[in-house]
Length: 273
Ligand code: PLP
Image (cartoon, rainbow, N blue to C red; front, side, top):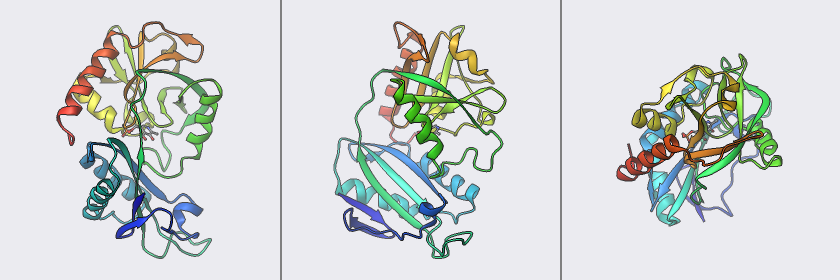
């Protein structure tokens, strides 16, 4: 397996990042996960825009997007897989322990993992912890993901594949690695970005392509919604058949099934929508 590290391809077994990299010691880094179909990245331009936004939010220098594009192309060419996920990681570089920021430039790593199409429906749980809709990192895709790891472990213990967070004012927010949509009176709604959720790229495409509305939703909407679904780069549009103990038969329901169809058709037609 070849990965890209700071300017060129390297063998994954010998590629080295400093043990004092601030991405490792304090989580001062950002990332993107990009789906790649037959060696071609999906929605890369949107991912690179978000990478730049996350860098600015964290106070990192803007990433060199030409290098990131070259890195993605080189990694995909070196590791052919029919369906893959590119992982772009960009950190504040390395520097002495205790310094505010890496002092030696930045670190860029692009790696590729295989992936498979997710099942059409899944189970989710809600967790008692909250997303902070007004935090310094809100909306940034940083490598500080430990909270998501803990919540996902809780979901797995309960036979679910995703955990959903509310925010500090009790509104529905997002999953550990996905955005959430609900169907009410036949209409699709998703929490607004002000809820503290990540500006998911799949979320934006689904809003654009289905006319879903951005609505403040109380967390307990999950117990009365006609349908619930998730969106993310790795799930695309995925129906939810169980929220906590509430099981719904027939997921994907008709509205979710239509959203899935629209997403498959439109995303298959244009790899950089
Ligand atoms: N929310 C969080 C916290 C995420 O980490 C992700 C993706 O990793 C998403 C939502 C979904 O975003 P996207 O559709 O861009 O994959």
